[in-house]
Amino acid sequence: MSDFSNVTVARKANVYFDGKVTSRTITFADGTVKTLGIMLPGEYEFGTAKAEHMEITSGELSVQLPGIDEWVAVTSGQTFNVPADAKFRLKVATVTDYCCSYLD
Image (tube, rainbow, N blue to C red; front, side):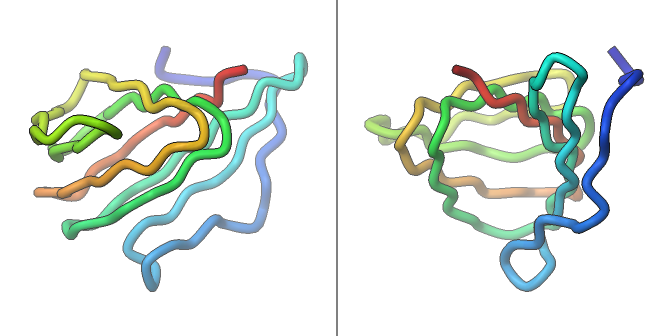
């Protein structure tokens, strides 16, 4: 899906790592929440409260998921899931556009 309809977009950006990762929160009529964001090249560690489904819409990165030693390459059109209450690491190789869905 390339467009979202009937959503509310937060005016205030979510800004991380001195502006190298930013996103906007969108809320759907049914209460579903996603963030749309962009990451500049670099290495980052994130923590989750809820489980997340990450869709990479452009760019390339490697992800190290919790409990796994290997780094997995992820490029445009690919996805990965992160469990709730976990930390994961990213090595972003190129400017990367993403959509994060929060799972219950």
